[in-house]
Length: 116
Length: 117
Image (cartoon, chains in turn orange, brown):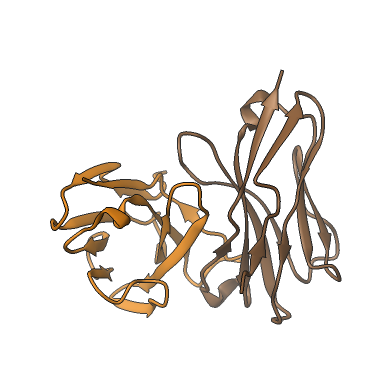
């Protein structure tokens, strides 16, 4: 019974390169959330997606960041032209349709991006 | 404005003792949920306990209990009989709106708990 799967677990990029982070939600879950955690900080909401739709991207920077959750395949968080400040842990979480009884989010183990 | 405030950056507790981690929240929505997550050094986020705004009783899950004081807008986590494996970061989070709304969780900055022998 696989949980939320994120890959890669660790990613190193040089400034100006692109980073792609993937997230496969738990089976039966159609809501996906991306969070960013900077060192010594809590998790900050970035974007909430359902299949083929972005529901809320209020926490995502307007430039260089994009997210998708296609009909088939994992959700992708894409960061173009990475800068050192993008170094962080990126967590994906999922919840079942229509959100379960509590709205609990099930988290993946995170993808740690390091920008050199 | 901060939705979730955790005022204790770090806490120490001796093994087998109880510890309370503080969390206050701010919302005008009558329907909301409060969560605690644990993040050990390995980095994953582990769900611990949930309290709904309309729940009459404080939530309990094994050694974890949530001291929910609605009028004070506080949702403190109590860990009884601390174990060395409880050493981790602990995050309080809130969902505004009903559980099936799909709204994202807002997280506090966390409290680092160290359990000593």
